[in-house]
Length: 76
Image (cartoon, rainbow, N blue to C red):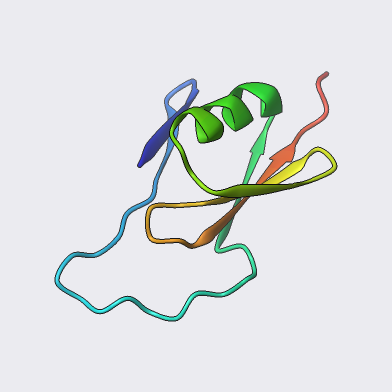
C-alpha cells in the first residue's frame, strides 16, 4: 500500500512474500501526522483497511496487519 500526502511525501507499507508472518503488536508500528485527517481517514475506509478510532486519532491496519497510527496536526 502506498499513501501519498502531497509535496512528494509518501509512505510505502508492504508485506514480505515467501516469509512466515511475524507476531503482531497491538502497538503502532509507525505514526503518520497529517493536516488532512479527514481525507486520510476516508482513504483508509475506502481501501477497506481495518481501523479503530480514539477521538480524532485513527489506528489503521496496513496490508500485513501492523498498526499504523494516524494523528491530526493542527492547521496553521
